[in-house]
Length: 139
Image 1 (cartoon, helix red, strand yellow):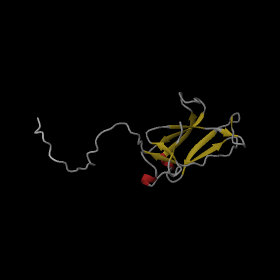
Image 2 (cartoon, helix red, strand yellow):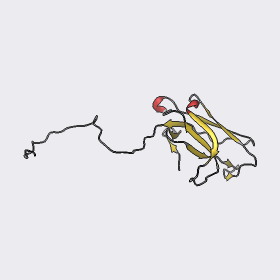
Image 3 (cartoon, one colour):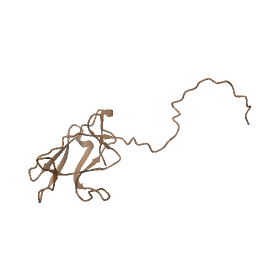
Image 4 (tube, one colour):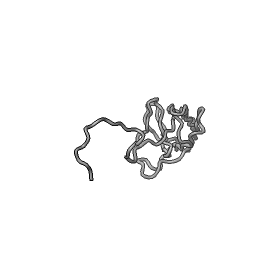
C-alpha cells in the first residue's frame, strides 16, 4: 500500500488507522540490504506536535507482502494534526544501534478519515429554478 502524500509533501496518516511502514537498511548505492546482525532500532516523534503521534518499532502485520519484517508502527493519538488545525509537521527520529545513519526526512500529519462510506442528501445545500405548473392534479 502506498502512503498518502499530502499537497504539503507530508505523509498523511488517517486518525482511525494504525500504519505500519517497512523499516529497512540501505547500502551506499541505495539498495535495500539486510540489517546488521543484532541491530536494534528505536524511534521517536519530534516537533511541536510530537505528542499527537506515537511511533514504535514492531513488525509488518499478517497479510502484508512482507509480514514479520521490521516496521515503524505509527499510532495517531489525536483526531487531527495538520494544516487544517495548525498542527502536523511531526518528525521521526530513528536511532540505530549499529550506527547506521537515518535517511528518512519526511514529516507526518494526522488527518481525519475522509473516505466516502455512504451517499445521501445534503439538506443544508439546495437550489430552486422556475417551471410551469404541472397539468396533473395529483393523487
